[in-house]
Length: 119
Image (cartoon, rainbow, N blue to C red; front, side, top):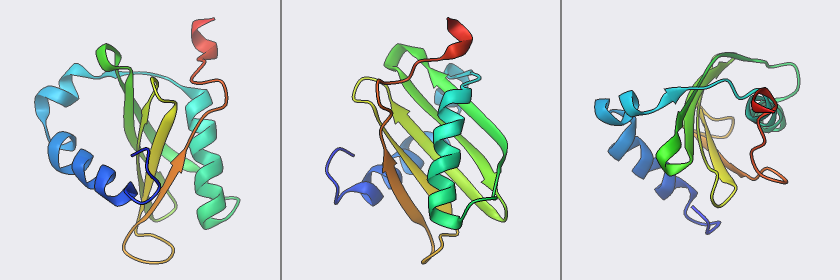
């Protein structure tokens, strides 16, 4: 995921190994992360255009591994995302993509993931 040519590999690995794993999903806690949702909204806006809000955003947090994952809708598209706090790097996938079956973007958060709800 840290190398700019392996985005698809990282996203495919996550989807194949974890997304359908009930134990993994049950271990992750639902979490409100408005700061992360704001960043995801900006990434989606850059891909599909401003004015396409994220709807039904579900953010899950696997505290033991400092790993965030979830999904949302952006118009007619599905948004899948994950974020690793330790390396301050996340990925977002749009299905269908603007340019094909799927578009993938990598993002970082300047200063990491600071949740205003916990301050």
